Image (cartoon, rainbow, N blue to C red):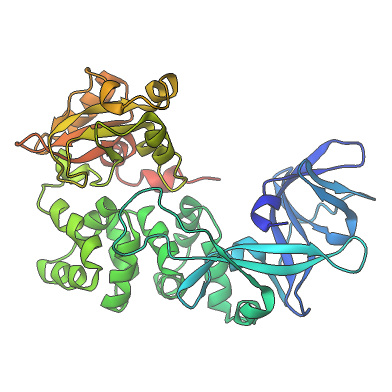
Length: 404
């Protein structure tokens, strides 16, 4: 049983009613192997409560079923010697890989579970590989081969691990309440990809303050993990000398689209766009297009359509031909070429157009992304509705609209 699946399940009472949903698994680090002390359950009133492992009779696809008694309604608090499987261990690095899941198995005792395996994967982005949707299967190792994962941590490491287990918007909300000095300590302790996620949720001026003092090589690795448009926005707040230093610290293939974005004015379509939408040749099939759109790492706006172009298929592409929305793809035969499914009504926007013009085009077409082309008719990127909202909403909107 993998923690990532358990944390999606409801907690079911003796009468079959849903009492809440599992949000994490509490592990006792003193055991060898580490044992499951219990489960953190959310949705119980406005609290997160602890349910001891001994109160759970079985774990199945329909949920975790209580075998006796009621649950303690006291707010959950982590005790010394315990760790949260998802909140503290997911995302931790072991060498060049990071933890993506923890496997549990029943222990010899009845109604008890323990850690059996650790699933490891490469970093979110692989240098030199720029094909969205390309993934490697995680490597599964015995828990004993990941001994350092289950060792004690410094307080700042524990706080960083807890912070790293949150949704990026929740991470940003939590860190805003801390003094700047503490924020910087946590930024230093966060894994590169989680720090990248956090920065993408903060205004650019706060991003700059957070990474001040970090080693340029570290910042370069974090920029590699960020979306190219977000990395360009951050670098746009810096001096030309600092930009040059950090671009040199990035992976060359990750830095190239960021350099291109920095050539556009911030209030233009080019300054708003992401340079890596899903791009296909007209001969690609509907089945291939849908497979690319299934990539779970794609944002919802980018997964809503594919952009059809003549080769080369990396921006700047060959001649831009048109767009095919996911709803059209779902209605067509899997073997049909996408070049025969193009929507003729989706005209592109020039990269030098204003951000207001882009917003107007998105509203007029009632779409979530629009193609951006250069003067030669080549696709150079796409602007999504979230990028436009981020630009036109008043400053400070993130703070006043943080998740509860």
